[in-house]
Amino acid sequence: MMADCAFEPKNFVASSVGVHKNEKSHQLDSHLGGNQAFNDTIYTTAYGQNGLGNKLYGNRSNVSNLTAYVVQNFQNTFVTPDRVVIAATGVENHQEFVDLVNEKMFFTQLPTKSSQRSSATYLGGEVRNLTESSTIHVALAFQGASHQNALPLLIAQEVLGNSRRAGRIQRNILAKNAFIDGAQAFSTSYEDTGLFGLKVSGSASHVIYKLIFRPNKLSQLLPTNSVN
Amino acid sequence: MKNVTAAEVELAKQSLKARVTLEHSSSWRRLEDRIKSLVYTGSAQADFGSAIDSVSVTDIQNAVSQALKTPLTFVAQGG
Image 1 (cartoon, each protein chain N blue to C red):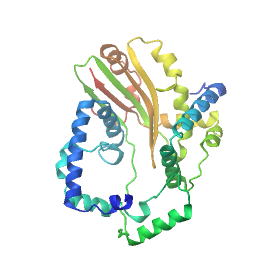
Image 2: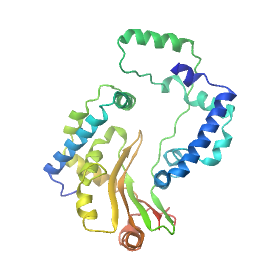
Image 3: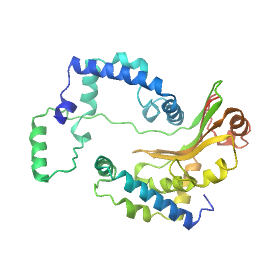
Image 4: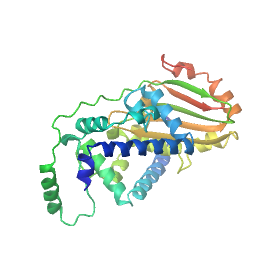
């Protein structure tokens, strides 16, 4: 059943369902607030307008372009044998499961050629989306480590402090600045690259004054492709 | 991170290991991590506890130092 779901829904009905689901998810996204939008902005700033810089849930304007052809083309390009991992948990008889998978996959027509994925390229940059809101969210990030080398920065994240554990950030930033509501380190890793940094949110007037308009070293750290 | 102590790192390691253990209380999350290990490292039998223990203070300092040499990403959103 799972193989059928992944490999076989190459028809108009399936793509129509996809279109409607995406429309609903985008509507839900707009109701739930801007945390995802903030994360999307961080990634677009760090990686540009492709690869990891693309919005996680895609662009709302592209939802209506999801036709059966687009769905089929996506499956033919990306659902290829070298990209498929079949994993299971709670399997009582491993060999029986392997035989079952082989039996099913033998009859499944998968394209043999897969497209080469371009690796993510970290760029860095600056974006300021300043509004009339009384709260501001600020992120400072650098290129982190790929999945294979993620552990040192994950431990550094724990030392600095995050949403689960109080660390240096809580002691040195939150405890000393009453206008900051939240601060946490983050470290995310992918196949080629990662993102390591700090997110701060708080009272707009104070944070803007201290972190945005008076950062003595900020201009030296920013790359030349920064935009306002 | 230049003045990070071994004690701080040890506490952080314990915290990270506790987080992994908590995450892995779900069989779906265990399966997900094993798939990632298989794809990225070629082995599904990743021992996260030992891997975390093997990270030294110097490894952390070097990783952070390396990260800070890359261009800054600065995003401000709100008032």
